[in-house]
Image 1 (cartoon, chains in turn orange, cyan):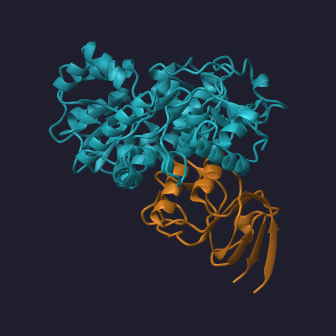
Image 2 (cartoon, chains in turn orange, yellow; image 1 turned 90 degrees about the horizontal axis):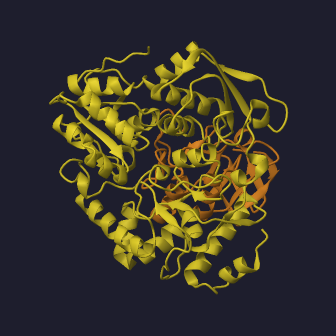
Image 3 (cartoon, helix red, strand yellow; image 1 turned 90 degrees about the vertical axis):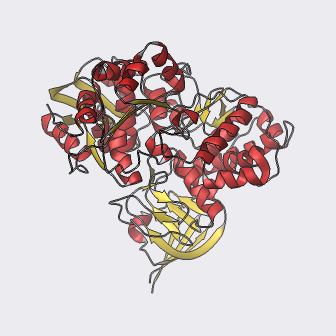
Length: 135
Length: 426
């Protein structure tokens, strides 16, 4: 086990810790996730069929429809939301999505989060800092 | 984020609790974007009436006021929703009453949506019920700041009309409708409206609906969320071709703004489309065109077509006319259905012009309000569908688990009549 500290820009304030789920590909909201189950449903996506509920979701960017934020808001209302978000490149979709999911979230890190964090790593997200404990 | 005195007054409740909740959301959203300030808008395109299980539960619990508070303002407060502060329209949503007995879609959703239309209509919302508000009278001016969602409408407004909007979401458009404000970020700022990628077309003439869609799909895959500039062997496009081009570019990538020098308003030349040196061009020729065509057709294997879907984004009046002309005197196969999706306002004109009667005599349908992807509904038992839309060919196989063929309008109508796919790239 080893530790790693990343610094970035906070997008939703708060502190949370948990297990990372890392996507190297952008994530679609509408047509890309099933909010009732908290599962990625886009065919050919590297996380097809994987559940993000209760995980800290690490992904490079949001893609696709403007329904992105609404679908992630629905995960909160359905109890299937991730507990935190670490976003490589922010956009209107992912910024609003993190806000309405109401989970601590961060972007603009000093290293590519999708490269230095691996699925299963233990992550502590504290406003503008991310502490990664490699598993 | 800098707030004006008016913003602070709204935040503090001077315009009522709902406007205060809306300003709270805009402040949280502006913080997330690192926006410097908000800008004023008086043109909002959002969605309020589209049925969903969560919305049905909220309406049952506390009426449409509660649904709007939770979903469109992201607020847990008990709010009474006032009239919209600025002009606001409803985009495409679920299927409406005209779909009953045609589309396998829950009657409860149709009724919930009709109830929502009445509520929001009373609050000043214009129920345009289309993904193409720009086809039915909502045409923002060049340079006008807007708050629109629907990726295919956003790219059209930015690129073809020269208006300024980000690809907003349900909560940000809801908050904008009650405040007339939106974060001044991204596409609202001059420096973010220059091109980033140059695509040069040669060896093939991009002409007609299908080719503009394929070029859009290519442009999106090349430029991702950035801003392509198109040059080279291009015909002069019309509204329907740029409608298809933009929808495709927003589907394969996340393009919200592009320039075609000499055609779209913000770039008079290739040089003017970029703020600095013109980048090396990415080529689009016969090989790239063929590759896009094959990507859009890779989900198709059975040539027995049981559903033909036209009108994505919602059809123009002339697309309905062309469909009627191709179907005139023919009959859709008993093993197939043909639907063309259109804004309700244009469906009314199609009926008045006699096009709908021709389409219905042939066994096809003109439907408004929605589409199979939005409402997750296709004719019962559909396994293989054909479409002239790159966007539907991309999304519908994933959403409904069916095979797709992508071709021209003529090929799609032919498939509807024969029940067989016989398309190919020419």
